[in-house]
Length: 315
Image: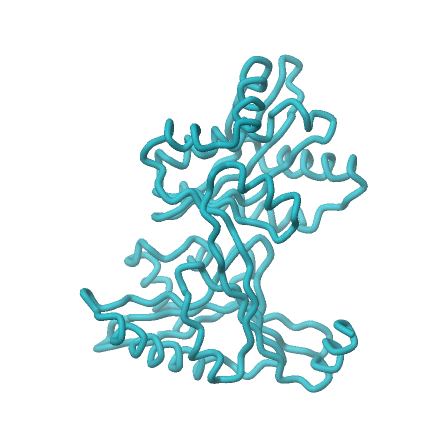
């Protein structure tokens, strides 16, 4: 039995694996033949996993992040009631075993889930780290408290939108994608992911009942804003947002996010805005009252040629 075969069964049994590391998500965003997984076992049971996406780019083989995938990295099953010192020692052992199973590549790039804060075992093996940020509403059990914590301007926008717009669900893959293409075109921007990729994601999350499109329309059925929400056992994620710039000032984007949070509260525990390092986007996400969460981007370059390219790029 291959590691992938073992991992598929592990994903079926282990409900807390984040959606971005589920085998069926990886099939959708990587292709079934383009990902593998490192496993640590104890007495025949998997206690840690680390899937990775292998990609050929020109003459280089790299491990990198698939498109529309926020985080991957190690998933570790910790012993119960483990003391802090023991936990760090355990992480060192487990992560080292995972690292040693990774194939030799020219470059490694992975974003770790924000629950992983200890990357020292990777540092000791020559990896580097930079920090990214997302915003997370950590408890969805009290919606009134969440909405009251929105910035006053967001609340005003939502009230304005509620008077003129309706929320609907289950926009088709074609309609959502075309709406996003059109919205970006109006801003002289182009979409960064293919319809084939989006269709793969859309169909697989709907099949597993872990995603939904949400959109706001007016009386003429014009879509003002749309959002693709996905979720796992612990969190929902605002995967893709499409905002028509012609309606940017009518509150539709905030309205859709409010409804996404309401839906998320029915299926999971947290709401992750999938934060951006762009200043204007960060400002908007922060206004919804989420808690800032740093997550680690771990990299390593073993190719002298790629290192030269990096030096030239950063000069």
